[in-house]
Amino acid sequence: MKKINFKIQALANGLDVIMAPIIGTKAVTVLIIFGTGSKFENQKNSGISHFLEHLLFKGTKKRPNTLAIAGKLDEIGAEYNAFTSKEYTGYWIKAEADQLNLVLDVLSDIILNSKFSKEEIDREKDVIIEELNMYLDNPIFYIEDLFEQCLYGDTPAGRDTIGTKETILKLNRKQILDYVKTQYSADQATICLAGKVNPLAIQSVNKYFNKLLKRNYHGKLKTKDEQDQPQLNLFYKQTDQAHLSLGVRTSAYAHQDELTTKIISIILGGSMSSRLFIKLRERNGLAYYVRTHNEPYTDSGYLTTQAGVHSDKLEQAIKIILNEYKILTTEYIDKTELNRVKQCLIGRTALYLESSDNMANWYARQMILFKEQNRQEEILTPEKYYARIKKINVQEINEVAKKIFVNNKLNLAIIGPYKKKEGFKKILKFD
Image (cartoon, rainbow, N blue to C red; front, side):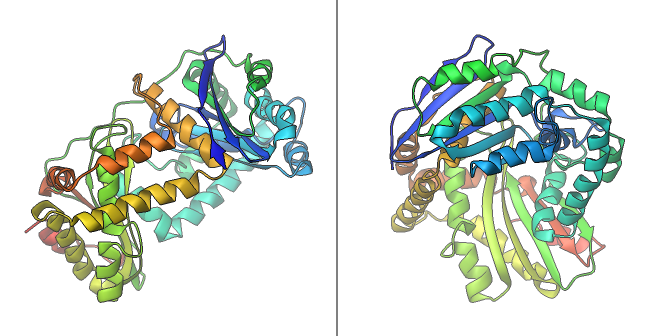
């Protein structure tokens, strides 16, 4: 499929509309992203962003229940879903391009006309608590939440996106309505149409979304991103396998070091041929899953390696990870390895962007995060992104590694049969 230049237009209400045509597809995705998430919450309403995401599929004045919404979309074979992160919340529908008007009708209907009935709110609490139980019972998922708690503590950045059982049970209709009024603002939202898109579709978008209002927008609290010594977070669980997340603070979204940090994460644990995958799994047989990734937020960021190892071999795994981090600060990566990693990232991105839903997310996510940063940055096409990747050199890898892999930026979260921190504190450092 061939992609052509995207265009950005703003409606009279301040809603930015991105048109991202793809030649050769018969599908279109409509995605609307709001610049809000769990970082915009407080202790009392923790989890409300995610709760609201669920409620928007529970009924409108025109479509009174879930079946009326889902049934209409299933009738045309559409795919649809929503997501909540710490800094944005999105709703999307992907369908045959001829169904665009219906897609816009349904999507605008749930955004603008949801009923938020008390009965549905009370019923959905049980559903979300079961979702929370699922995460708590799955250490592969939960270890990242524990790592972010280690980084940011009891702050909006450190709390779980889903909330707690206590906060979920206490949420009420007034809180939901107040949150919508302050957070679902036209000027803090972006809608993207990707796929088979006619330029005249902007008229349809305006027809369905011109009633989305500018609000008294409530922004997020600035993340405290300072650290003067290694931090450790233990979660006791009687299991044979321990799960760890060992990482460091890095740069924020769109920082000059962000893309280099992304490359470093792939070098370390971003593929089956990466250094830590080979060292932990293939050479030492310590783990089944090994992965390193970086997470850049608008005002902070981190890189971490996660793995599941036998509880008796956790210390060995930690030392191996720390050693591989250190090597990047003392030795230049071979150019052949770096070129291979850069092409890996380019290739994965190209495959990811083959579908219209991912293309919509590519553009809308950039737009909304720049809005949160109050920055007028260039929205990157995939081609410009690839060009930036190709420019990264071995010296930049070494320089960024030296910035991030230092003792006072180390953080370690562990799930396993451990109650004492002293032994881990002794090894949580670069020799």
